[in-house]
Length: 297
Image (cartoon, rainbow, N blue to C red):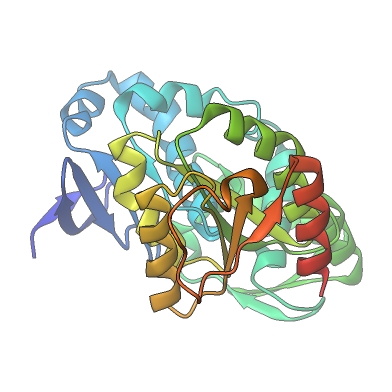
Protein backbone atom coordinates (compact mmCIF):
# COMPACT_ATOMS: atom_id res chain seq x y z
CA UNK A 1 0.00 0.00 0.00
CA UNK A 2 1.23 3.48 -0.85
CA UNK A 3 2.19 5.86 1.95
CA UNK A 4 2.13 9.62 2.20
CA UNK A 5 2.80 12.28 4.81
CA UNK A 6 -0.25 13.77 6.50
CA UNK A 7 0.05 17.52 6.11
CA UNK A 8 -1.52 18.30 9.46
CA UNK A 9 0.40 15.99 11.82
CA UNK A 10 3.47 15.11 9.68
CA UNK A 11 3.04 11.37 10.18
CA UNK A 12 3.71 9.13 7.16
CA UNK A 13 0.72 6.79 6.91
CA UNK A 14 -0.99 4.35 4.51
CA UNK A 15 -2.82 6.04 1.67
CA UNK A 16 -5.75 4.85 -0.41
CA UNK A 17 -7.20 6.60 -3.45
CA UNK A 18 -10.95 7.00 -3.92
CA UNK A 19 -12.05 8.96 -6.96
CA UNK A 20 -10.56 12.43 -6.67
CA UNK A 21 -9.65 11.95 -3.00
CA UNK A 22 -6.73 10.61 -1.00
CA UNK A 23 -7.65 8.71 2.13
CA UNK A 24 -5.14 9.13 4.97
CA UNK A 25 -5.33 6.19 7.37
CA UNK A 26 -4.49 6.05 11.09
CA UNK A 27 -2.42 9.21 11.45
CA UNK A 28 -2.35 11.29 14.64
CA UNK A 29 -5.30 13.28 13.26
CA UNK A 30 -7.31 10.09 12.76
CA UNK A 31 -6.10 7.38 15.16
CA UNK A 32 -7.82 4.13 14.22
CA UNK A 33 -9.75 5.96 11.51
CA UNK A 34 -9.19 7.97 8.33
CA UNK A 35 -10.03 11.21 6.57
CA UNK A 36 -10.15 12.26 2.92
CA UNK A 37 -8.44 15.18 1.21
CA UNK A 38 -9.17 16.36 -2.33
CA UNK A 39 -6.08 15.27 -4.21
CA UNK A 40 -5.32 18.60 -5.87
CA UNK A 41 -5.50 20.26 -2.46
CA UNK A 42 -2.35 18.56 -1.16
CA UNK A 43 0.05 20.67 -3.21
CA UNK A 44 -1.98 23.84 -2.62
CA UNK A 45 -1.93 23.41 1.15
CA UNK A 46 1.70 22.29 1.23
CA UNK A 47 2.70 25.48 -0.59
CA UNK A 48 1.43 27.70 2.23
CA UNK A 49 3.96 29.78 4.12
CA UNK A 50 5.57 28.35 7.24
CA UNK A 51 3.70 30.88 9.38
CA UNK A 52 0.34 29.91 7.88
CA UNK A 53 1.08 26.24 8.43
CA UNK A 54 1.97 26.84 12.08
CA UNK A 55 -1.34 28.58 12.62
CA UNK A 56 -3.60 26.31 10.56
CA UNK A 57 -2.28 22.77 10.89
CA UNK A 58 -2.72 22.20 14.67
CA UNK A 59 -6.30 23.46 14.41
CA UNK A 60 -7.10 21.30 11.39
CA UNK A 61 -5.51 18.23 12.98
CA UNK A 62 -7.66 18.78 16.07
CA UNK A 63 -10.76 19.40 13.96
CA UNK A 64 -10.28 16.14 12.07
CA UNK A 65 -9.75 14.15 15.26
CA UNK A 66 -12.72 15.67 17.07
CA UNK A 67 -15.11 15.17 14.17
CA UNK A 68 -14.09 11.54 13.73
CA UNK A 69 -14.30 10.96 17.48
CA UNK A 70 -17.88 12.27 17.38
CA UNK A 71 -18.71 9.78 14.64
CA UNK A 72 -18.61 12.21 11.70
CA UNK A 73 -16.69 11.47 8.52
CA UNK A 74 -14.22 14.12 7.35
CA UNK A 75 -13.65 15.13 3.74
CA UNK A 76 -11.58 18.24 3.11
CA UNK A 77 -10.60 20.55 0.27
CA UNK A 78 -8.08 23.39 0.32
CA UNK A 79 -10.81 25.99 -0.18
CA UNK A 80 -12.48 25.00 3.12
CA UNK A 81 -9.54 24.98 5.49
CA UNK A 82 -9.43 28.66 6.38
CA UNK A 83 -13.15 28.82 7.14
CA UNK A 84 -12.83 25.76 9.39
CA UNK A 85 -9.93 27.32 11.29
CA UNK A 86 -11.85 30.59 11.71
CA UNK A 87 -15.08 28.94 12.83
CA UNK A 88 -16.46 30.22 16.16
CA UNK A 89 -16.71 26.58 17.24
CA UNK A 90 -12.92 26.31 17.41
CA UNK A 91 -11.81 26.76 21.06
CA UNK A 92 -9.53 29.72 21.64
CA UNK A 93 -9.05 29.93 25.42
CA UNK A 94 -7.51 27.50 27.89
CA UNK A 95 -10.93 27.08 29.52
CA UNK A 96 -12.57 26.16 26.20
CA UNK A 97 -9.76 23.76 25.36
CA UNK A 98 -10.07 22.16 28.80
CA UNK A 99 -13.77 21.64 28.14
CA UNK A 100 -12.85 19.76 24.96
CA UNK A 101 -10.67 17.40 27.01
CA UNK A 102 -13.51 16.75 29.46
CA UNK A 103 -15.85 16.02 26.55
CA UNK A 104 -13.32 13.61 25.04
CA UNK A 105 -13.17 11.65 28.31
CA UNK A 106 -16.97 11.77 28.53
CA UNK A 107 -17.36 10.25 25.06
CA UNK A 108 -14.97 7.44 25.95
CA UNK A 109 -16.45 6.44 29.32
CA UNK A 110 -19.80 5.28 30.60
CA UNK A 111 -19.67 6.59 34.16
CA UNK A 112 -17.62 8.94 36.31
CA UNK A 113 -14.42 7.32 37.53
CA UNK A 114 -14.00 5.00 34.54
CA UNK A 115 -10.42 5.02 33.28
CA UNK A 116 -9.67 6.33 29.79
CA UNK A 117 -6.17 5.56 28.51
CA UNK A 118 -4.61 8.05 26.11
CA UNK A 119 -1.50 6.51 24.63
CA UNK A 120 0.77 7.98 23.48
CA UNK A 121 -0.08 11.29 25.11
CA UNK A 122 2.69 13.02 23.17
CA UNK A 123 0.71 12.55 19.96
CA UNK A 124 -2.63 13.59 21.44
CA UNK A 125 -2.38 17.32 22.11
CA UNK A 126 -4.79 17.80 19.22
CA UNK A 127 -7.56 16.59 21.57
CA UNK A 128 -7.51 20.09 23.07
CA UNK A 129 -6.68 22.02 19.88
CA UNK A 130 -3.31 22.76 21.47
CA UNK A 131 -0.24 23.62 19.36
CA UNK A 132 2.07 21.46 21.47
CA UNK A 133 2.28 18.90 24.28
CA UNK A 134 3.28 21.51 26.85
CA UNK A 135 -0.07 23.26 26.57
CA UNK A 136 -1.96 19.97 26.82
CA UNK A 137 -0.08 19.06 30.02
CA UNK A 138 -0.85 22.49 31.45
CA UNK A 139 -4.55 22.03 30.66
CA UNK A 140 -4.59 18.59 32.27
CA UNK A 141 -2.88 19.88 35.40
CA UNK A 142 -5.38 22.74 35.60
CA UNK A 143 -8.34 20.37 35.24
CA UNK A 144 -6.87 18.13 37.93
CA UNK A 145 -6.34 21.13 40.19
CA UNK A 146 -9.98 22.08 39.70
CA UNK A 147 -10.90 18.50 40.73
CA UNK A 148 -12.51 17.75 37.37
CA UNK A 149 -10.30 14.75 36.60
CA UNK A 150 -7.73 12.43 38.13
CA UNK A 151 -4.61 11.46 36.21
CA UNK A 152 -2.65 8.26 36.79
CA UNK A 153 0.11 8.11 34.19
CA UNK A 154 -1.62 7.79 30.81
CA UNK A 155 -4.96 6.95 32.48
CA UNK A 156 -7.55 9.65 33.10
CA UNK A 157 -10.76 9.52 35.11
CA UNK A 158 -13.50 12.12 35.28
CA UNK A 159 -14.50 12.98 38.82
CA UNK A 160 -18.20 13.33 39.63
CA UNK A 161 -17.72 17.08 39.21
CA UNK A 162 -15.95 16.63 35.88
CA UNK A 163 -18.59 14.20 34.65
CA UNK A 164 -21.35 16.65 35.52
CA UNK A 165 -19.51 19.46 33.73
CA UNK A 166 -18.95 17.37 30.59
CA UNK A 167 -22.53 16.08 30.63
CA UNK A 168 -23.87 19.62 30.89
CA UNK A 169 -21.86 20.68 27.86
CA UNK A 170 -23.13 17.63 25.97
CA UNK A 171 -26.73 18.42 26.84
CA UNK A 172 -26.82 15.82 29.60
CA UNK A 173 -26.56 12.80 27.32
CA UNK A 174 -24.55 11.19 24.55
CA UNK A 175 -26.07 11.44 21.10
CA UNK A 176 -26.05 8.41 18.80
CA UNK A 177 -25.17 8.86 15.14
CA UNK A 178 -28.11 8.96 12.73
CA UNK A 179 -28.09 9.31 8.95
CA UNK A 180 -30.99 11.07 7.19
CA UNK A 181 -31.42 10.53 3.45
CA UNK A 182 -33.48 13.07 1.50
CA UNK A 183 -34.14 13.70 -2.18
CA UNK A 184 -32.84 16.75 -4.06
CA UNK A 185 -35.66 19.02 -2.94
CA UNK A 186 -34.63 22.28 -1.27
CA UNK A 187 -38.09 22.88 0.21
CA UNK A 188 -38.08 19.39 1.72
CA UNK A 189 -34.63 19.95 3.20
CA UNK A 190 -35.72 23.26 4.75
CA UNK A 191 -38.83 21.64 6.27
CA UNK A 192 -36.77 18.87 7.80
CA UNK A 193 -34.07 21.22 9.07
CA UNK A 194 -36.62 23.45 10.79
CA UNK A 195 -39.05 20.95 12.24
CA UNK A 196 -37.81 17.36 12.04
CA UNK A 197 -34.07 17.30 12.76
CA UNK A 198 -34.39 19.03 16.16
CA UNK A 199 -36.90 16.36 17.26
CA UNK A 200 -34.55 13.59 16.12
CA UNK A 201 -31.82 15.13 18.27
CA UNK A 202 -34.30 15.41 21.13
CA UNK A 203 -34.63 11.62 20.96
CA UNK A 204 -30.90 11.14 21.54
CA UNK A 205 -29.59 11.06 17.96
CA UNK A 206 -27.19 13.32 16.12
CA UNK A 207 -28.64 13.54 12.58
CA UNK A 208 -26.41 13.99 9.56
CA UNK A 209 -28.27 14.78 6.34
CA UNK A 210 -27.40 13.59 2.86
CA UNK A 211 -29.44 14.45 -0.20
CA UNK A 212 -29.24 13.90 -3.92
CA UNK A 213 -28.26 17.54 -4.47
CA UNK A 214 -25.03 17.15 -2.53
CA UNK A 215 -21.76 17.30 -4.37
CA UNK A 216 -19.84 14.23 -5.49
CA UNK A 217 -17.41 15.07 -2.68
CA UNK A 218 -20.03 14.33 -0.03
CA UNK A 219 -21.38 11.31 -1.90
CA UNK A 220 -17.90 9.81 -1.87
CA UNK A 221 -18.04 9.24 1.86
CA UNK A 222 -21.78 8.88 2.50
CA UNK A 223 -21.51 5.09 2.71
CA UNK A 224 -18.85 5.34 5.42
CA UNK A 225 -21.14 7.58 7.43
CA UNK A 226 -24.09 5.24 6.95
CA UNK A 227 -22.00 2.29 8.10
CA UNK A 228 -21.07 4.15 11.31
CA UNK A 229 -24.68 5.11 12.08
CA UNK A 230 -26.96 3.61 14.71
CA UNK A 231 -30.10 4.56 12.77
CA UNK A 232 -31.01 5.59 9.23
CA UNK A 233 -34.10 7.58 8.26
CA UNK A 234 -34.94 7.46 4.55
CA UNK A 235 -37.58 9.75 3.08
CA UNK A 236 -38.94 8.29 -0.16
CA UNK A 237 -41.40 11.08 -0.92
CA UNK A 238 -39.95 11.59 -4.41
CA UNK A 239 -38.60 8.03 -4.83
CA UNK A 240 -35.02 9.24 -5.34
CA UNK A 241 -32.82 6.26 -6.34
CA UNK A 242 -29.98 7.53 -4.11
CA UNK A 243 -32.24 7.29 -1.06
CA UNK A 244 -33.23 3.69 -1.84
CA UNK A 245 -29.62 2.77 -2.49
CA UNK A 246 -28.39 4.26 0.79
CA UNK A 247 -31.20 2.65 2.78
CA UNK A 248 -30.52 -0.71 1.16
CA UNK A 249 -26.86 -0.40 2.08
CA UNK A 250 -27.83 0.32 5.69
CA UNK A 251 -30.08 -2.74 5.81
CA UNK A 252 -27.17 -4.81 4.51
CA UNK A 253 -25.14 -3.53 7.47
CA UNK A 254 -27.93 -4.49 9.92
CA UNK A 255 -28.63 -0.83 10.67
CA UNK A 256 -32.29 -0.07 11.55
CA UNK A 257 -34.08 1.93 8.85
CA UNK A 258 -37.16 4.11 9.28
CA UNK A 259 -38.93 4.95 6.01
CA UNK A 260 -40.97 8.15 5.68
CA UNK A 261 -43.12 9.58 2.87
CA UNK A 262 -45.37 12.57 2.34
CA UNK A 263 -48.93 11.23 2.22
CA UNK A 264 -49.88 12.97 -1.00
CA UNK A 265 -47.25 10.96 -2.89
CA UNK A 266 -48.19 7.57 -1.46
CA UNK A 267 -50.85 6.72 -4.03
CA UNK A 268 -49.25 8.49 -6.98
CA UNK A 269 -45.90 6.81 -7.30
CA UNK A 270 -44.43 3.38 -7.94
CA UNK A 271 -45.69 0.50 -5.82
CA UNK A 272 -43.37 -0.03 -2.88
CA UNK A 273 -42.10 -3.49 -1.87
CA UNK A 274 -44.00 -4.99 1.04
CA UNK A 275 -40.90 -4.63 3.24
CA UNK A 276 -41.10 -0.84 2.95
CA UNK A 277 -43.89 0.55 5.12
CA UNK A 278 -43.22 4.29 5.32
CA UNK A 279 -44.45 6.53 8.09
CA UNK A 280 -46.86 8.82 6.24
CA UNK A 281 -46.92 12.55 6.94
CA UNK A 282 -48.73 15.64 5.69
CA UNK A 283 -46.64 18.36 7.34
CA UNK A 284 -43.12 18.45 8.72
CA UNK A 285 -44.55 19.31 12.13
CA UNK A 286 -46.69 16.16 12.03
CA UNK A 287 -43.72 14.03 10.99
CA UNK A 288 -41.69 15.45 13.87
CA UNK A 289 -44.34 14.26 16.32
CA UNK A 290 -44.54 10.83 14.66
CA UNK A 291 -40.78 10.33 14.85
CA UNK A 292 -40.67 11.59 18.43
CA UNK A 293 -43.25 8.96 19.39
CA UNK A 294 -41.49 6.18 17.46
CA UNK A 295 -37.97 6.95 18.64
CA UNK A 296 -39.01 7.52 22.23
CA UNK A 297 -39.96 3.85 22.38
